[in-house]
Image (cartoon, rainbow, N blue to C red; front, top):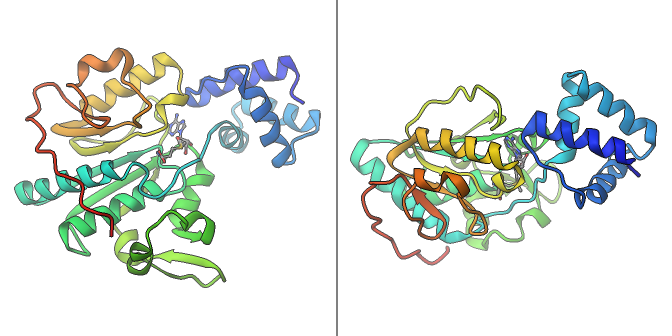
Length: 277
Ligand SMILES: C[S@@+](CC[C@H](N)C(=O)[O-])C[C@H]1O[C@@H](n2cnc3c(N)ncnc32)[C@H](O)[C@@H]1O
């Protein structure tokens, strides 16, 4: 069990390294994760906290993995993917290309779902679209880049999409994403609260769903301000329906279906979501 002092140190570290706000109810969760990682002994967590505090890179990565939540899934809120793919289709028609960013992508399901939706909407296996997928958690990113999933992780993907976009992997009961889906996505480590993003706009579609809810209020506002400046004038930011823009609301126009655009962006030509294949 984490002592009160250790939990306090963990709180300060989570905020410094990732902008993540830990509150008292996270203490039991952190305890469970420490046990799962074999850090149950007081000396184990003590060593990790100390090494991360003195900025040991491996310990900092491990600590970040401890305080981030990787829960994700295929086509979560399918209407977001229909809206995003239709916007991408229009941009390709108008400009010949489109750029998408999945920020806080976790183990890849969100970015790969975007790739599938784009391939379906453009009826093309090699569309002129770049999907950048970023996360602070190196372990989640490595899993995403591998592009292989087990039966349980694939349970929510429709049978038609499984047939079209996945093939059996070398390892039994594992499935590998098709090259057409994989080559649309570029993976990159990116801490949303770090000073440098090394990322240029304009971004047409930005998914940042179920990420900001973990960040401290000031960090959330700063991230949204930077995101607004990277969005194309008619670009769209998607949050989870349970999330809101808070103090950054004036940077965006009124949201539709938790899709937010810059003030002055042309009105939505709201496509009716097509039935899932
Ligand atoms: C709950 S998952 C959301 C996954 C996906 N966006 C979705 O909605 O299904 C939250 C992700 O945000 C990432 N994250 C948390 N803090 C971050 C930060 N400061 N910078 C970048 N990613 C962060 C976590 O590592 C985790 O993978």
